[in-house]
Image 1 (tube, rainbow, N blue to C red):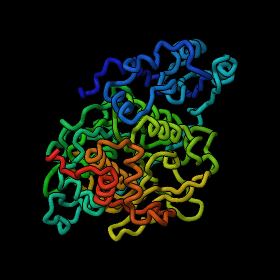
Image 2 (cartoon, rainbow, N blue to C red):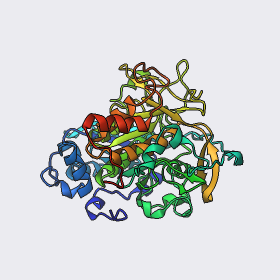
Image 3 (spheres, helix red, strand yellow):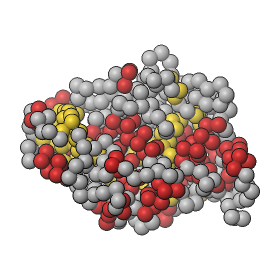
Image 4 (tube, rainbow, N blue to C red):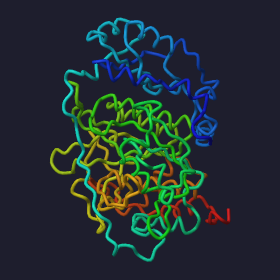
Length: 465
């Protein structure tokens, strides 16, 4: 794959971020249908890459109207009423419009093709912003063991080292990482091979420099992609990566849900096999509208609907379960409530659940998270390639995502849905699942061996294949 210069996808990219900086209001417009569309399900190559089409064909997933972009005719009619489009979604059939008109939603609701028009941002209501408290620790030199993984122990704890030992390190699998930025990820070749980074996309500021933004995504990426033998080796050092910025980081605005869905659609379009995201939302700034407890049904929050749609397209969607805790009324952040995905909680080195790890039941009774992985005092990279430790489900989810890529490489005969099932079935609490552990801690050696045995495969190593 080239460095994301696919001309067929450029028609879907809006470069109107400057409108959001000046307009006091943002509106999300939902359309009733996709009539007057210039694209067709009979010509998917106009909006999906060959790799994306192949992934669907291999898993028996058809191209449907849901995959078509919103009608340009409808969007044009909306923009005639004032404003600029900053983000659109083909799966949700929406467009987000920046405008100075406080009554634009009321005007747009009168259009016959507008299903719903809602104000999602009001500049005058903007607060000081949500500022995450990221704390880093120093790596302990005594932890540098006689191992190819060095400081990192996640692959060994999850028995993913077995997959690596027989040649499965993620080669040929594309992981899209949705995050707040990837500061200096392109400047630390001793840890991260830039040849593995196959593309970048800034949804928040199209055309911007994701490598000049926040380092949170760099930390997440390093858990999967790092390849410095004897010091820091990640869980999928030979996978390919697409880096997508969808998050402001210092604020929580409702349009970030739309940015996330747009990022997931982009990942789908270029043929990603896995989406990893450590972003989660519980409440928002600059809006009256907040989600309620009953909305955690996997089919209400915009971001959760997008995550579920990505899973339907044959992508393994793996997200952090969140850091709201699991006692009392601690809410599950979105999109961890989505159906068909794998949400990942956090445990410590002793495999006890982390106090911060979110867990519970969705409003329709599903267990969250699905699995748990080490997420405390995890070695990660931040600005300039500094190796530190950090804690959170942000760091447990990419370990599972990376090893899932290795499992996909080992089991090419299976689709994403089956791969996720193997991961869950390998977990140590599979027969007695319950929050906050979910199905428990996965065992990737068990996953590949069980799947191989059930399929009657020979179990050859990657080199033998």
